Picture 1: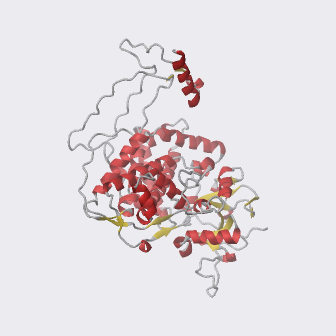
Picture 2: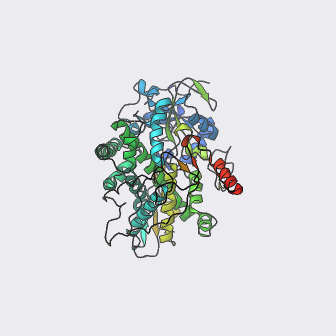
Picture 3: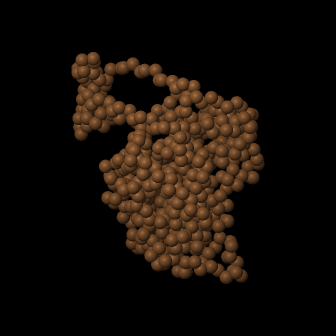
Length: 523
């Protein structure tokens, strides 16, 4: 079989051609953009699967050819085999021959940048390691308290009115508020940043300008953190032993901000839509037969926040799903079609329960490192909203809901709701914890330690701005704990405290068994 990409990119059918404006482009290939792709992506995936199988030739904006991978196992192979399918977009043959111009609508997505998602091998490991290490320093409990506070603040803005748009007034704002706090730039949170983040992935004429605004905001942040490090994600990237340059730090912050924002905003909206429109979903959730995290996981199967990820580029001639892939061809990870692959989901109405085999966060070495943060924002945000407004009802007929789609995602334009007006909730004035996990000693690790009293939290005076609020001053760094184990007044470690050097620290099951064995033997 030869590659179906035998036409010239950019060519269009003559006006009298019946394929004109019907989602069919040169060579009879289907367009992955335009009305059909935006209004009914699931229908388009079904047609492509029926016509081509698990890997289908498609056309991107400007009728640039690419491959959309539809099969679940084929997507796993695509994402897990960087030796065959690279993330380096400079391999794209369409870029090399000039078929794709620098001002292409998808340029903010595919233009090579010095970030881990465009790297393979050692460079990817260095940059990805910095991102992963920095994310591991985030205190999940502290973040959840921030999410709950921000959620209730947003609900306070419309709870007295009895109606709201949960996309424009909740889902699109909560992720940006949280990410700005995690990054250490709460003062930069505003409507313009929210809209720029949403716009730059749509392939619009203003996408490049929106991208420039986001980059300018993050550049200012990195410059501040080089001069004055704080206890936030941006500082951790700046200070990481990977010694990333300012450009690398800015680009990684941009990548994380946009990916986290777009995916989480869509996820929240999709979960809320399912709760409001599917009676079984709502009944199971309110009846205690389904938790909000389980509802989120089901939504990640049925309505993943990213429908596809662009892209991978073939290192050499190869075969995938029965198709002959040429060196330099572009491929898209088909997340939504992979989640509905009949091979893994013959019955799309079946409850997926706690099954996390979906590809909502991609897979392989480039799997989303911040997926737990995204889940937390959706879990806590949706739960806080439903607790405050338990009588939420859809404000329009379900068939009146509208979506906007592109090759990467499909999101609700609005989600109008109505409810019984309720008073604003007074937000807890206590200062919240900082975003960082408490640091543990760099040396010894204790198997057990005596209980110690927990001091009462200090309360802020009435009217004091919460520490997490946009514009609030960062909290001071907590002092590093002592390197020794718990010590009495004399300053010596408690006798009998077992200490294991870090390089000999056993796995968790082994540690548990050792502790039980010591208790059984009496020492």
